[in-house]
Length: 261
Image 1 (spheres, rainbow, N blue to C red):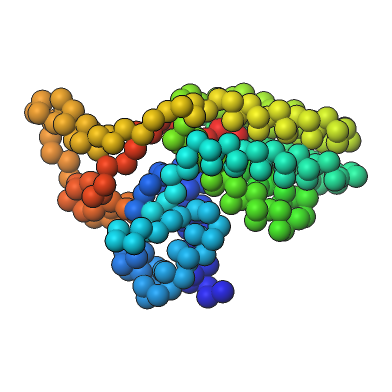
Image 2 (image 1 turned 90 degrees about the vertical axis):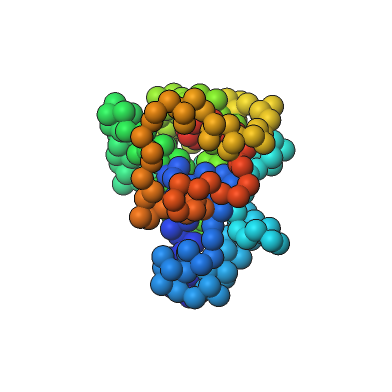
């Protein structure tokens, strides 16, 4: 794989996991090419790889977009995570002490971010726990699979999760690590299954997209209440046009909360 292509993939995936890219965000080829200093061909290669990983999709006339999973796709993604992550723990015979120490440190970082009210850091850490667990256990292939699945469920939670449950998720992680530390693999696997099921149960999969979301935001009362005009950023985020213009197609209504698993 070309290093530049890998960098583009990693940057987009990391931004999704950190909650900095929303479902439905347009990823313009030319903007990405300029940002990474590569040709549009390289960008297209990266997008095609992300498409095979289930992270982006292409529209024939409008380009590349981050996926907006349906309710059925959400159920499938969480079911897959439960099978893979629970199965990963069930295959263990023992967990090395250094892995337990690493996981305990990770949970401590989660709780520090929660106590500090650092929403972005806590969201990133809570999602990264599952990737870190697979990586610490030394299974590179499963780590890649879980990373992609976690990105998908991050996007799902942006669309369908009505409330944040950061403390509860971190507590669940702590219980899983405590079971691993005592060598109770069966309990750790059961707790993982219950944890992922709990996150899925907290989603409102009946939520309907709001086709007028973009126009509704533009025409809120603050627009006409003498609010100072916004100054366009010199480096607009991916998918957003300069000068404050919105993307061409209004995106569906999303909850402001972020995935907490």
